[in-house]
Length: 382
Image (cartoon, rainbow, N blue to C red):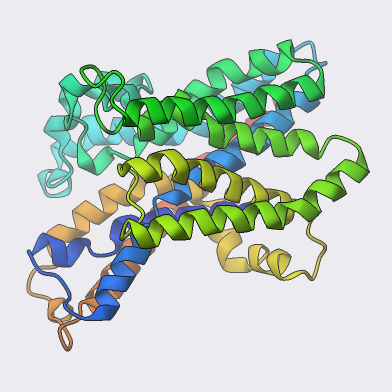
């Protein structure tokens, strides 16, 4: 079930990055209504990152709350996070910076010179802070710009275990989660209205961890609800569709009135982000409480979504590099020509190519590295 949610999230993010890039690269754009509407639709795929955040908050809070009585609480948590995250992330950085420069044909188009200049922020998981400061605006290489969200997660891991331990009472921790949801909205609103404009770039409401903590805290709130009284869980599960419905209405209103869901848009960065956090929180709650046979259960239990979810981490790490590398080798292809003024076929072909290559790399990463390293988790059980 949870792998299905991961699969949905990674497909949203990948198609957001893949769709429309080829016509744009050649200075073209589809003239058909279908091109315009699909461009707007896939342009909202960045919200898959928000879904990842909510799911991460849900899982991490549940793990920490359940193990808070362990004498090796911190050791077990951080050891498992290191085993899950570092091999793929740092392995990918090492390949980019130390291996690919010896293979110019593979290194071309990956902005390695730009990456090398700012690599300290990648090694230290601080690209989200670096990219949010006005003085460094635009210096994060576009090919590797997705790493801002991994930085947010790492910074969350630094403080959340201690907070869960300090707020030993479940209801107290739920109150903290609710307060963080409200605080994130206030902080984003202040930045959108111009607070700190001399220090922060317009990307700050999207990139900074305190601004995005509402998604993580919403997931944490859901995890804590599920560890409460059965009646309360059932009651909230019944309410969740209505909360999700209101959130969908807000998102659709922004989508229509703002022409698209653009994360740098002030209305989206304030009301939109909050609505997405509530929507995905309701989705996770309904998903984990849905009975077998329910439509949502069947959807998220589907083989395709679960498979993409299984390999989602490596897919997220490599997919932009794959996209930019493939763009070098598509000149002159027959499928680049528009059909009746539409580039839908071009986008479908390129997206399929990028997805297939990214999946092959992620599959290899899982079987050659990840599952072997993750087997070491057994030494860090409470």
